[in-house]
Length: 304
Image (tube, rainbow, N blue to C red; front, side, top):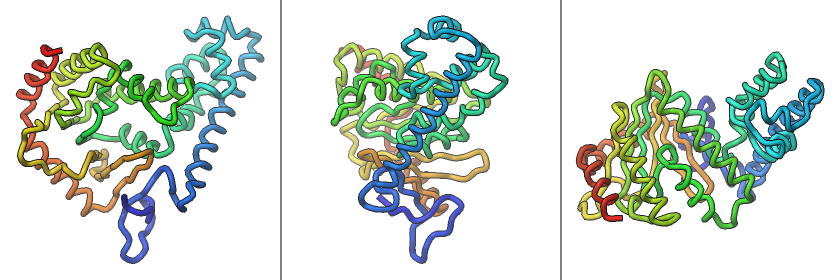
């Protein structure tokens, strides 16, 4: 992992690398900065919940009535108001309209949306929304943008120490929200290469894997998506150093993102990001073609 040397617009110290290390240990080894960021994010969620409650009471609505109008139970409304659950941007819009809040809730959307992600992923989540191209190489699990809800839940349930139920639900909601990238207009160019082993792990059981493989086949036929498999019998693989993502923003600037063990690095140095994109190109050339990959996935699906 590169050290935390500068932000995107900052100046790196002499001899430093242009990378931003996020998550555990942002500025020191005890992780206090990451914990402070987590606390700040929770503060945003709590403040939003208090605002929602105040506006609901002002409108003279009980939680049951308000919940019916926005499509949730009274207990879920209570979770929103108490900062224990994070509403989606669409839910915030609906709540603002129902309460005739005049935009007082909608102004929270960007901050609340950012708070729903783990601290180490917040920068990447923001970049995804601005991306015109995403190049993703995965070696352990199916990429989050491609996961079914059942597969997500299986992965999140395996975390150690375990996630509490509300955090797990927030992570599922946030990951599903990211998948709106497939419906974005104009559509971004999306390329996924994953190791064959990723497709063979039966996380959650055979039914979960079956659903995941079927989902991959559907996504893989979209015109803006290229999905490729790196077979285990391939004798050359330029991706042996692990998973990574290259993001190209609308202004043409590239970023390279690497994540491991609840920490992440966002590389901004032009030389390093161009090299990462070039390395991805080599990986893509070594993998099965998109057509071959879909046939391979069909074969795996048939063997379950």
